[in-house]
Length: 145
Image 1 (tube, rainbow, N blue to C red):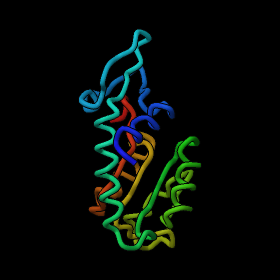
Image 2 (cartoon, rainbow, N blue to C red; image 1 turned 90 degrees about the horizontal axis):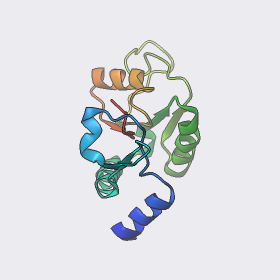
Image 3 (cartoon, helix red, strand yellow; image 1 turned 30 degrees about the vertical axis):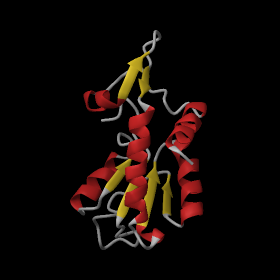
C-alpha cells in the first residue's frame, strides 16, 4: 500500500476534518480552513507521523507492554479493537489514578509505551507517564493541547 492509497483511505474516512478551534501547537499540521471555519488537517504530514508511530510500536517486542487508553466514549471501541488485533492492554473508560505511579495498588502497571486517543481527556494518564518516564503516542485533533 502506497502513501497515496493511504491518504485516499484517510480522505474517505474523513480523518482530515478537524474542529473550529485550533491550538497554536497544532497550527503546523493544519492545511487550510473551510468557509464554515472548520480546520482541515494536512494528510501528508498526518501520514508521516503515523509512519513514525508505527515504527515506535514495532520496536516493542512484547505487545502486552503497550497500554492503549481512552476515556472518551468514541475512542473506547477503537482501543478495544486495536488491543484485540495487536495484543496490547486496553484501558477503555475511566483511568484509575496511580496505575503507572502507585506500586502498592493491585492495578499497578509498568508499560513500555502508552497510546492515548485524546490528550485533554487522558491528561491523568499523560501526567503519570511523564512521572514514570514512559513514552507516549497521542492521537490529536486541531484543538488538542
